[in-house]
Length: 87
Image 1: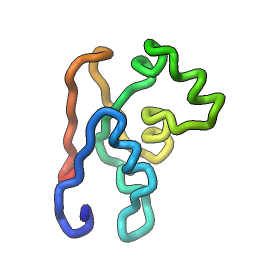
Image 2: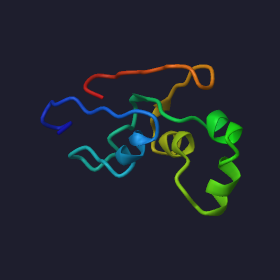
Image 3: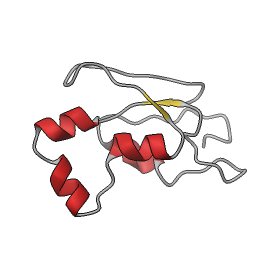
Image 4: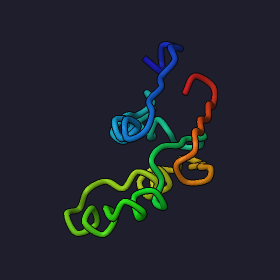
């Protein structure tokens, strides 16, 4: 969809679906683009981050940064959104 010029969007934990997405050249879809989602502070505040790490779950903020995404967040639990081109 992204390569066809269509808008791609997700919220909360939904952006985890973007982790395996790539551009036609094979690079991660989010590389070099602004992204957001459930952040590490929020995962920590609900007591989930250590359990997630122990179970090798994807921690969204960490994974997006690893893939080259420009992760942005606001104060924990506040409404926040970013867009970058069609993402």
